[in-house]
Structures are given as C-alpha cells and as structure tokens.
Image (cartoon, rainbow, N blue to C red):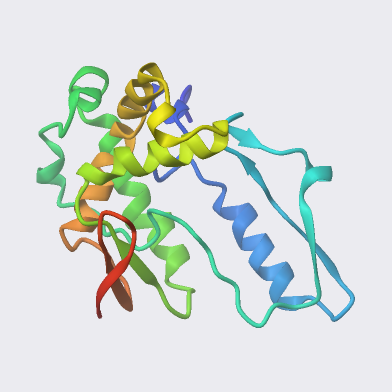
Length: 199
C-alpha cells in the first residue's frame, strides 16, 4: 500500500491497512466450528508492529456464542469529499498536501469497511470525551507494553506517539463528531468510565 497508493500507508492502523479478508475468514471459521474444532486467533505485537508468528496464536476450541471485534474505525462514516480539502494536522499538511492519502482512507471507510460492518449484528461505539485524551490513552498503553508507569514514559516516546496518532486524527474526530454508524453509543470520561448511553 505504501508503495502502490501513498507512503503514509506505511503506518498500520488507518482504514486500508487492515486485513479484512483474514478477519472475515476468522469469523467464518468460528461461526462454522464444531464442538472439537480449534481455530487459531491472530495476535498482533504492537511493539513489534506486526503479527506474531502463527505458532504463537492461541487456539479457540468449539464455536463461540458471540464474536466481539475490537476495532477503532469500524462504523466510521466517510466524509464529504469537500471536507478532505484542508489538512487537520501537520502530518496531513506536510506529507499529504494534495489529499491523495486522505481520499484513499475515506474511500476505504465508505467502501470495504462499510461493506464489512454491514454484516455485523450490532455495533457498540465507545466514545472518547475528545481527541485530546487519545494521546494520554495511547501513552498509557505504551507504558503498559514497556512495563513502566505512565508517568515514567520517556518524553521522546510521548513525542513519537503524538506524531503517530496524527494518522488516526481525521477519522477519530469524524467519529467523535457523530460520523459513526452504531447501534449503541457509550460516552466515556477521561478515565474510560462509562457515562451516558444512547443509540
């Protein structure tokens, strides 16, 4: 994708960088599994920024009564093409001045991702209070991965993450502003505690 579409697709996470085919095959396998069947569940190494080796994937036995998928951008609605004209952050301004990457991401949101989520029985959106908390939450996650307290996360690591989350800013802000298709929306506070719930 980074070679063929746009260099910004080298960063995993934005729509267009997920293996929806693998996810659909996993859902199909789990849905059709017999009581003694074992289905390998893919595992991702965030620090290594790649899938763990197949032999490290855990095996699920039988058929689950429900399949829950944790995915930050599923349910996002595409933006009007005119809204893509102006960059929302320095990453877009410096590395996507013509808007080719954001148009491609928007195309995935309104295309393959919308088609994929249309098969779901229900979508629950855990709504952050604002984009401002995303950096703190991502830093907490990184601190956990490193085995340090969030307060001990090196400043250079926080700065790196501040640049990293710019790849997710446009779609996240769109979702926080109501551009999301969800059956239930749960409003979270800064500490990730649920507050109001609506449809």
